[in-house]
Image (cartoon, rainbow, N blue to C red; front, side, top):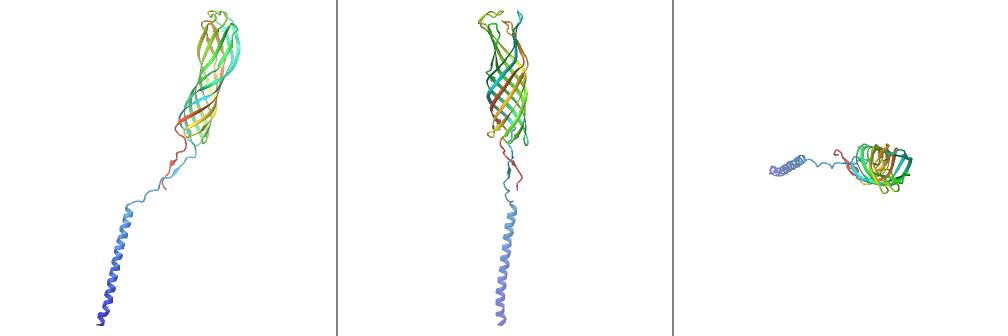
Amino acid sequence: MLAARQCGPLRRGGFVFKRLVLAGIVAGGLAGTAYAADMAVPPAPYAPVVVPTPYYDWSGFYLGGNAGGAWVWNSGTTITDTIVGGVIAANQRNSVWGFAGGGQVGYNWFFVPNFVIGVEADIDGLTNRTPVNTMDGSLLQDRTEFVTTARGRFGLTADRLLLYATGGAAWVEDRITRSQFTGTVNGATPGTVETLNHFVAGFAVGGGLEYALLSHVTARAEFLYIGLGDERYTFPISGRQVTASYDTIGIVRAGLNYKFGGGDPVGAISANY
């Protein structure tokens, strides 16, 4: 009887212990399954970090327009008669102001952090008219029609500001008109108008500054000095030969460019963290 009473609690204790062991096994199995599931799916990567560059990129192709003023100076014009002979006018000097306007196209290479090398070509129309009185009843008028240059550019930048020097070749087209008002000069009677188009080559040097107003829009102010060689041409009716010694042109102008490249910093993608 005593033995039977003692066995009852032991049996109940063993049963409870078995249930606790079973519950532990089930919980351990579930935890292992969850861990295995976590190991099968890798964690999502972090978003890439974008590190902006600290400078404006001046590289790329650009085109634009310009407008300003031009100064034309002639160091000496001599007119001779090729038929009769003799000097009609000697060493006449003239200078005149006018309007200049046109366009430009170019390309820049930007070297980090602040050096630019570029090439540029432009063409401007001028309104300058240089008169020469000849004392033979006629008026000689020289109009500078177009100025074209092809130049290199070399500059230093401070972020959106570019300071540059420029130099290269220049070509100028002149339109020269001789009008006979009184008297007859060889075959030129009153009312005779003779017109020639003349081309002359030279050099162009200058400098300026340019600023990026927007990512792809820049504004500039520029000065160009153009030196030309001697010019010589002859009017066929009157037989007048004109020799112009070393014409020079100065152009001060402002311009706007649109740039197809470079621009504001867009950043560089770094490694994930």
